[in-house]
Length: 291
Image (cartoon, rainbow, N blue to C red; front, side, top):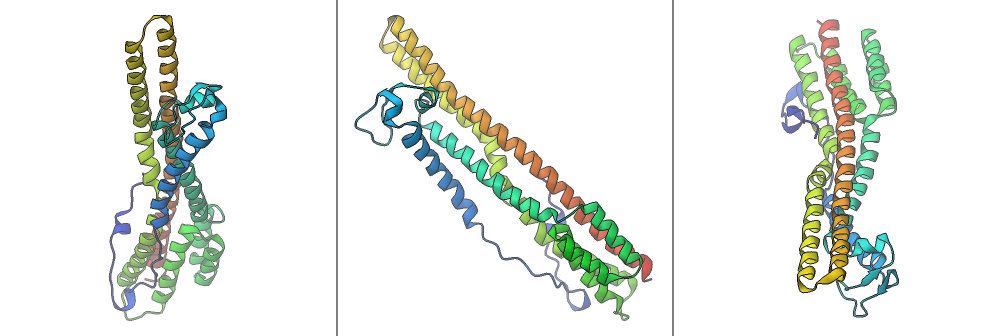
């Protein structure tokens, strides 16, 4: 996960001219914790009623129940059903990955703003060099995103400090820096929110797959011990094949989670760098132009 800037975890309380105008965003994480539960339930429904439909087996279990003992799968999808009770958990994990990949993708795209972050910062630098703060604020309104939000908060304080003769240049620069820190503290948690689900599933999906495989192997060898002959060997081969579906599901889910997690953290690192560059731009510009 992208390393969080220490200022994002520190609430800077100031009074007087250096007090912040940044307002905290009200967010709720209830949906984030409800989504995994829904995905696990959906995984069971898919396993039990779609993959495990009676029409997919030559000898379905008429009693049904939570885990019907169907026999004679007609295809590879039906054989996945016989991988055991770990299969629906793995399907649920895959659905969790898909859910949070979509959620993070929408969030990161919104946080990236409307255009190139580097080009945006260059435009702001140009306007500040010409002492045109209003034009720089207009660029922030066009850019939007996390970098635009932080830059806009800093520019408002920048403009306020220009007309604050009672403060020294050093005090004004510190006030601008604190404003940027406050705005950054509100933006970074939003960027990194819910990445923990991807990182966790990337770690445990493979282990869950191996657990399902081991359970399937135990069941297969147990059946082998109760019977003998060529039929027992065929049952053992089929049981091992079914157990390996757990490993395949686990590795596949883990691979998707790892890839998407790394993509998002790389993108977030780029946004974080843009935020840091924004703060540096504002403080250096003010220090050089308004001594």
